[in-house]
Length: 210
Image: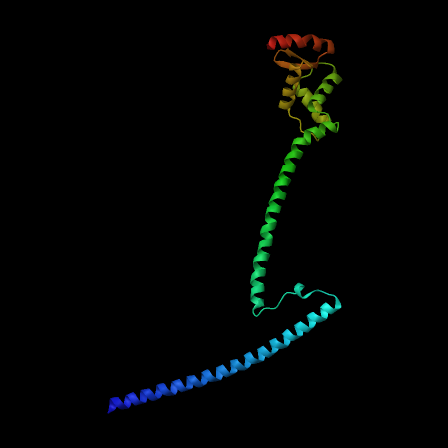
């Protein structure tokens, strides 16, 4: 008897729970149906207004119906999802242009560096070789590389002039026969070679080199 009573009570509880769930389901179904009906009425009104507005625009000579994007049931989410890849693709399309511009800028910088000596020559700025020859001509007597360096440094304080560079330039002028080198004890002195002397020493220097 006790077991049958328990089963009856359990069935009654399940039946009451199911009845309550059905009532909640019916209430929710009715609510959603009402909302859907209202939305459908609103959608119908919007569609009718859209057709009316499009016909008025065509009558006024504005855009045609094909120029106006059509509405879709879930257009908002689709438009946003399609717009996102497009907006993300724009920076990617601009990146190569920036890289190309950067690379072009580097090439232009390199070309400007290579063409800088040419611009210096065209602007009339004297080279170190010209300055050294002018110094030797001005003094008219043999001078050491240190003396030439000191004189050029004082005359051109804004220009960096190194003694090693001056010495190598003097030796280059000696090799070309434009400067004469003499040695006194342990010191080496340089002087400008006379034009006749330079012409006369050019052949022996060539022969000795051969």
